[in-house]
Length: 168
Length: 356
Image 1: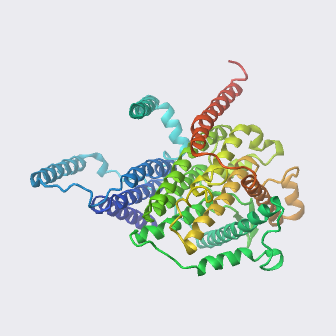
Image 2: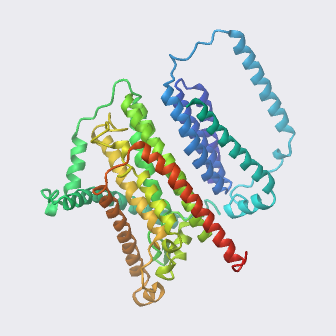
Image 3: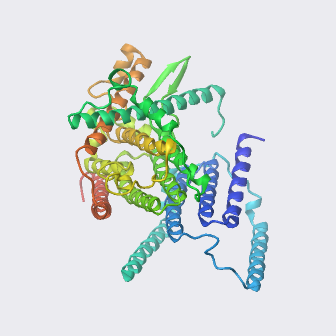
């Protein structure tokens, strides 16, 4: 097993284990901390794919900014196991489990048919993730979706301002 | 190629990491001493002068005192997170040093050894990633203390750091547009030619915004509301004692040193010696001596910034919290945006040979 494979398995187990712990841990603060760990593991995968820009942006935006806001909310609301409403309806649990399971089934079936299984991921020699190539791709081939998504972000920001104004 | 590395490289990097970590710890230690001396001079006192000659052993005495204090962990707190908080604060403070070019290169045992731990091509973004991680140490520590005042202090600190990160990032975008690279090494090398090729000449406004934000990120006066010890309750480290408190306070000094280093390498030519042609100097006295002088010059510039940090602390009172937020969101961010747009327009005009 090469060093890259060892790191791949380590990061994959870390990502999956932390993702399971997000759901399983009792305290929401711990859930968020495990979610941050998951993001770090995913960033590690990006680095293995030689996509350093994506890796660091993932850390800055998701782990660094969005998760901090999550932490803010959870810490201020002081959520914990006692304050959580007890789920009485057993049927809801069953329905949730069944629909989630069928979604998993559909995704697995869909992924089995895709071409991606026959292509090996370019480990450590792909060049498109480097910032120069990524910038050129974004501003030539994908310039329209890129601009559209920026409009989406702008409208989300304006929406946030409007909502906060109404409260005050 | 990733990970195809030999043993000499690993040893070389390990030595470099140990040297950088140890020296930033020692420099931060003596920054605490320098702070007290500077404060003393500004207030016409003598400052610490009992431990050792000129009080030089004072930082050791301080550290020893903190270690010997009783360690109290609040009863109802989450013990693991309570310990994790200061650890994260220290860790994120130390991590920035990995991408800063401390000098050009030295020549030992027939190898050229670069005086930078990792020359990643996204260097400055890495610094940002680490800075944005710095919030977690404070937030986790404050929440795990299980104390309302700590939590409020932590929120105060975190919202301040997040707010000023934005303006800092936008100010940097303007700088990156002029340099055209994210690698700190290349940014420093571009500034080597003349003293007027330093980025401070090209981006004075960007530097000013960056400097103000650096003060805010390090929780230094006039932005030290998170720990304003004499008017608000202690802040996020209210419940901490012994060396865990020491780590929080010490992380601030490491942050100060490393943000000074970042500012030196971004705006003040890094290890460039002003008015001296480095290549001809290297020919006359050899690469290794030049590297030594380079590192010395770098540290001198960083020390000047450290002095600025202290000077400001002992001169200016602090902002009120709403003033702080107003400054961050309503003044610095629009200024940084204007700076960015102006820089972009300038570069476009230049590429277009000054025609509209």
